[in-house]
Length: 359
Ligand code: HSE
Image (cartoon, rainbow, N blue to C red; front, side, top):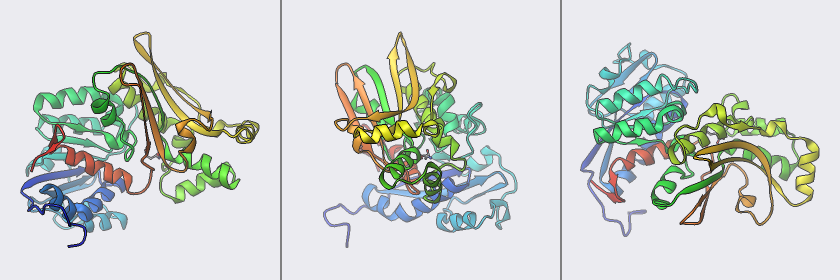
């Protein structure tokens, strides 16, 4: 059969029951993505991905035999809410959502940067109930990822957060696994695809900042309020999550020195281009005096720098260590599919220990 040559064909034997809590654009995209990839995952890893519950603020649906993610995604995309479906429960208590037995809870609720709620409460309760947690929501990761990971370890479960820190660009997992044993001295990164796409479009096609923002919105990668991207908030949030997890847990968003690309002066842009440089919105966390100094600002990247060629919605990260030198990862463009694919990756990782797939 096309696409399976050379691969052992497995009958799915390992059931992975998952719930999606928060059924907006991201939740619906995940439901559809899993629906489209379930055959591949079953064939390749022997895992039967089963959506057993979805919840939004109006209610929830559950079925131990599995819900149709594609149909639910279409329902959501037509602007309707879960409580309007027949068979829906018109309340939303997490214990009821989990009652049917859930291995992984995917949390894709609106982010509150100050309190992490309601996603943080859902994460804590899910872990307490013995479920793995996968975060699409940046709020809980920003405020409490290390704490959630400690709680999860005590319960023998895990917290996946790759969708909150670059999605398709691997960041946390690279640092933790490939740089284990070394001291991480600095993180330098392009973490916001929207800003990088805007800067690239302005340079390559000479369009205005506002035209480039509108294009990024049409491409579906800018946040609903694009000032979150262009003022550097998105980069600051992602970098704070990484800094707390990898350098200093005391780092907080309000201590990030932040300048966005909306503050670029035309003379500066013209000078950068004339001298062969490229402007990137760079997030930087430097280990210093037992803590970390975290900044976000546009910088001019010269031609020999690995970030010079990171154009469009692509992202990049450079880790500087004492014993393992420097490591640069590029790629992971922001797009419509990347968050859903990163969530699926984290779901599958719950079945993978020490690089060996079970199932
Ligand atoms: N708006 C973000 C970006 C995607 O442009 O990278 C979600 O984090």
